[in-house]
Length: 114
Image (spheres, one colour):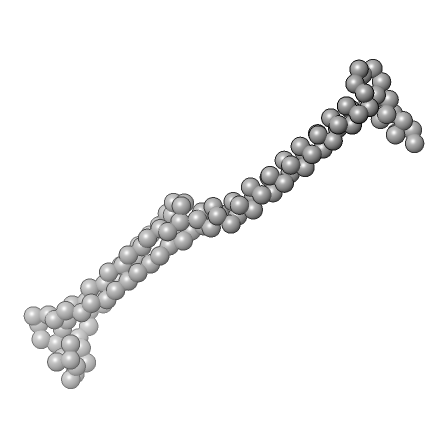
């Protein structure tokens, strides 16, 4: 009870405003604080639904493999094409790219199928 009396004295003593004006100003302040909280919540939700997905790493990788005849009988050439597209709004660092190739002859009887 002592706390409530202290708050009343602080609110009403030495002020030229009426109780109505003090109450009105207090309610206005409460409404403004609640509006700021609601606006902050809305902004955060909007960010999570619209902007945040675009900031995640989102790489689209496409590859293709084509075979070509070789002038040497029993051998062929292979061409690998690799495409990487950054579909996100953030930058993506690709650390290393490793390329490997193998040289081998076709199995017997398969030379004419290529």
